[in-house]
Amino acid sequence: MRNFEQWDKFLITIAKEADLKGEDREFFLKRFDIKNENLTEEKFREQFLSNYSKDTLGYYRKAVFRQLKIICKDIDHDRKGKYKEIFNWLKREYETWYTRKENPDILTEFPQKVSTVNNFDVLPESQQQVSNPFIPLTGIIDNPKLFFNREREINRIFEVLNSGSSIAIIGNSGVGKSSLLKAIAQKATQYLRQPRRPIYIDLQHIHSDDDFYAALCDEVGIEKCSGYKLNRNIKKYRILLLLDVVENMSYDWFTNQLRSQLRALANDIVPPLRLVVAASKRLDILFPDSGDKTSPFKNICIEEYLEPWNEETIRAFIESRLQADFLEQEYQEIKFSEDEILEIIKTSGGYPIEVMRLCYEKFEKKKL
Image 1 (cartoon, rainbow, N blue to C red):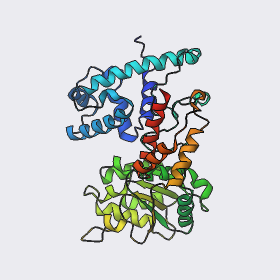
Image 2: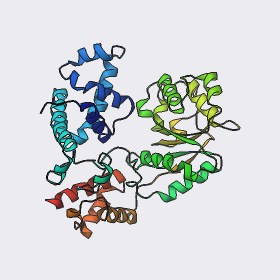
Image 3: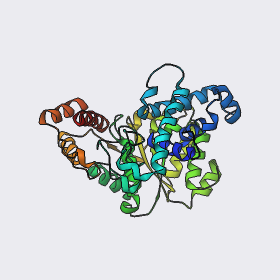
């Protein structure tokens, strides 16, 4: 089959499954447009991204490949030729996806999903059943049905926000900071006494002051501006600004002017911004007051430390997923032994991302 009339819709589905966002998502959709299959990287850059340097193009390529490797094992290697391999994989997946879409009655005969990794969010409402409940394996959990635990931290964070302060979530990589930020954004309407519109920005995708102002203004819905104009245009808004991977703001490509303006907007008498930031280290380590660099968060953000899950939480998580209502019926009898649970507790160190991975692998073995 070579009917690619719905290729664009299919790519959007894959981008969502691979957790591609922002400029990474746009690069993926453009690079893997079926019309561009035979373009070399240089020809592609000349036609579509001539204002991008080779280094910038390489950055997006690596970011997209890193996410696609999660759902496309064909490219989990260091050899060249990945573009062709990805196109070939996409075309195979498209045929399955298109056949299912055009012939929904065959779902009972051919229950394969587009991918076996993270299909919960891409299935239609009536088909939200999975063969392994320990998903997603990577990326941010932004589906409330899949978010687990952290009630104490959420209550504490909203206590701080309602007291008039901003807050910093501090924790090691893999402990769940990004997913917690998403949960806070989703609960803001319910928990905040004074309404604020939640806006989430991942600083991994922001590489300059200009990028940051563009992202912020775009999310707020105002023209791109900075300095006095931003201060004037944003004053009428009340925003809960959630900044992920905020340690990136310590890099030299962010200027002191940006850091100072962010601080001012969050420290006004009636601040247009209230901040929730996530970082891997304490703020006084990331942003020491030295030289001409102003710490954007000193005396503004109260720190909340996010710890790994304890044994009780891990056990509760495993039990909840094994009993999940979105698990396909034929796998609902699968259980973990006490020894297996203890191994997961010990090996994972309590990091949710590792708990998920270990549980997923054990569950897959039990399906055989």
